[in-house]
Image (cartoon, rainbow, N blue to C red; front, side):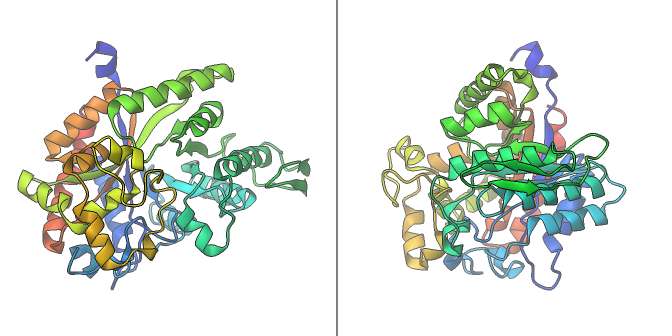
Amino acid sequence: MTAASRRVRIRTGVVDPSLHCRFVPDFTQRNTRFLAATTGADSLWTIDHLIGLWPSSLWKTAHTGGARVVPHSDAYYDPWTLLGYAAARNRFSRLRLGVGVTDAGRRNPAVTAQAAATLHLLSGGRAILGIGPGERENNEPYGVDWQRPVARFEEAVATIRALWESNGEAISRDSEFFPLRDAVFALPPHRGTRPELWMGAHGPRMLRAAGRYADAWLPAFPSSPAEYRDKLAVIRSAASDAGRDPASVQAAGWMFVITARSAAIVEEILHSPLCRVFALSASAQAWARHGVDHPLGPTFTGAQDILPQTIDEPTALAYAELVPDSLLRDWLVVGTPDEVLDQIAERRDHGLTYAVMADLAILHPSLRTGMRASTSFAKVLRGVRRL
């Protein structure tokens, strides 16, 4: 570890599951806000989904204690409404508020530009616009065209920037996907600032787009610290080619964390059916690195193309049996708090400066055990500040 890497301070964001809860509708939101405030986190994040990444056929109390609190794994709240609610409930907090990440195809970019600018103004400049090309599951089932998502994403970002930079004047802009004809966007910046653009980018074309346009890179599925480092180098190079300071693109990462006070509890979460079937969202290429064929085919791209609502319970359980432990440990951040902190430190040494973390303890078959494990997640959040 170099002296320079030791001086890097990693900031943290906490992910709210953004799901409707039994009895108290904002149960997870309250818990996440409290967790973020008490652990020194920099930001709170919501999820922009209509369908989750888990087969809903498995979301039962027989498989996860979380189903006792969250009755349906696909009951997602609208992210912008939820962030507005969070801003209103935390008027005196300086937590930044991000959506990770919103869909460039399902939402017209003018509406996204308006939602993000509104939150930025009403929260006193705390909004982060996380944006990506989206997933098949949140588009195709709802009649939204799923052809050429990356091209659509690039045009959506260009449209948002054009509207934000229009100074309230009517503008026209040719675009294959989102043409503007005397379009007016009159919401002003907050003290000269617009929401930061954080891009969920993984493939080569998306990485280059992040280098050209992003304020931060927020990949959801880094498979290893070395791959993270190599992709960050692509982004830095693209930023330099575009005449930007390569260091101006913040190096973030979305991390799914499994942690508990003991290795035994960690193993119980790791071997739960819902945790194992979550590996379907890894690509066939990631599976192949562990010597196993992806059950959805050799060219399957993972989270971007999965349709989990079509997988019945017996099939999902059969798929879960195929998942190698090594894939889960490579793909997720797994271990006791000290082990997780070591893994985050390794990613820091490969360029990471901002960790946006989601706690997967809810996947434990026992609700009580899963909730107790959240204290270990809090310990990780506090520990990151000391790395």
